[in-house]
Length: 350
Image 1 (cartoon, helix red, strand yellow):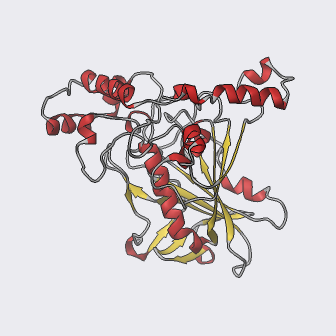
Image 2 (spheres, rainbow, N blue to C red):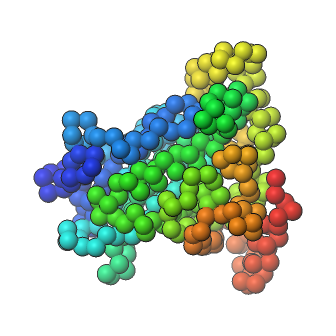
Image 3 (cartoon, rainbow, N blue to C red):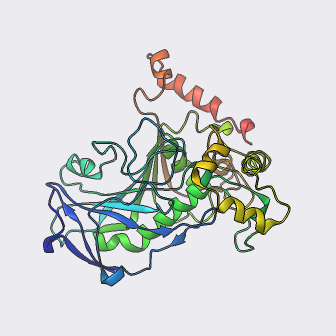
């Protein structure tokens, strides 16, 4: 890998950006797409200029805060909304390229675009193995996780009349990244009208859910959900408003922040350390929230009622993703479809 030099400097709307070059790609790493305020929608940076007119994008931004796991997760910070662009080395006069946007898994509780050694979500690998004559641009991104992603309180709902809901901050972050891509990817040779989002496990669930949330229409054309069909992916993987309130209020109580005064309560939880938040959150699952404003319908119901984005949607499982693959190795495609249909029965919606 070569460090940034004049050959990899690229003029963009935001300023000149310098990446690092591999045999197959130029990598632009650690581009901040939004700023974070705890339990508020992200602040888009899609139109912001680089400080001093340039940016050396040669290392990853920090990962989002998360509990410790066996996976290697590098530097973490609450200010973690960064994306990475992997651009193939092709003639500068080439046509605009399709864009693949990867959303990592991890139960919406852990994971990062830069996790593991060697790097597991390496866009250069996709570029290097793309079919001849079919180059693509790959984007990977971070989004908020766990207790910082699904807090839902009446105090948060009432805080901002312009955003009368709470929770689902991971999906708000993903939309912010897609808006950044929509505005800026042409500068990197990408076609903003040919964006495919794809992800695995919780990333696969996210890919499916985004088609049912407010503000997502027009940001992508195709979605590929890998192993997002099982659990998570059934109706039990979501909170309704009541269950979300119960879960979040329990966090507030464990933090001893359950004041009657709204401002005092919000200040208390926003000033809490992440370790204290983790302890109060416990080991429960992080869940998307079906509420009345941003995410109003369980995705199968949104699809059946015509309230889902008009996009191409591919859904499937990766080989050996779940133990069921070993329990039923001879399952036929018709048997699999029957199982999927039973899993996604509308009667199981929240």
